[in-house]
Length: 408
Image 1 (cartoon, rainbow, N blue to C red):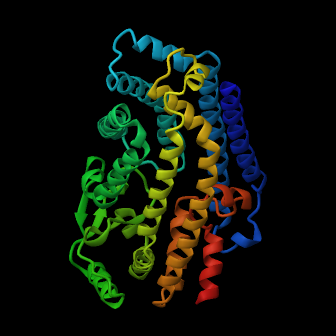
Image 2: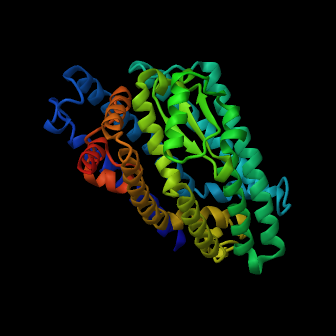
Image 3: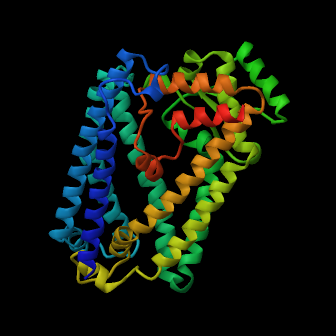
């Protein structure tokens, strides 16, 4: 019974994703829509439509391939076969799941590697975004794999140990471990993880740093760390982000952002990021995520070591790892619904952060900066409303411009 439910869920999810992509493709037009007039010129709009079309076609290929692999694994009892094969090597209650998930992760990375390579060195290169080199690309892949194996293996080992010896309170203790990890990562991600991939240097003294300090004083925002990240070594796309909690907060500006925007536009983008901190969006999002994790862990505790679920995946022996995989399939519809809620909250937070920047008279500068960033990255400024509702964590540029002008 479980296997039919899982196949139905996987198939439904794939079909829904393709339908959303189809809705976006239907909105593509040869001429500039009236609402985009003044943002894209004719040549850039034609280029953006070509970029969107190529990404959409490539997305169909990659998602279709992933769907096929998962379907074959389910129909041919691939998950169960791997479990039985590894039991010939070890049946250690921690070693077996770690080996199992390690092989799945490594296999997944190997399968995804050529798709990522094509995306970076063909599509992104074709449209002038790629600045990465094969050495950087391969290095990133190896670093990501290594970090996933180390951090994921460590967290998984602790959770499995808890499950083995404290099954009654498993969900509560697992929730606590995952929460601790999430909080630590929120505070130290920029200091501990980012340096594996990018170089972050303090923003040098000068006009921009002084303008940022002046704004921070005006906003009553204690700012000690302003960093520039070398995003240009991989892409021409610009960005900025705020990370950390409490005294560990820091602002990170991409070097491409500094190159593309004028000083006032950068201050407006910075004001938006400060707005997230002032409105406690980062903290609220973390708390919501923690609550969601607790609910997930509680429901998960009823599925682990479930004989019927393991049997549906092709094994006669119930196990922690097969239960976790089966649960991830069964729980995906709930994940989609919670994702809708998180995206709604995130879009609301973006409007509030924009309004905060606007309160300092930076609405026009923020609009100008957002236009430059969006057009430079050939963003789809006219997605289908259903696509925005279902999958966008940020409002569209047009929605943000409209809201900023109304608040100004």
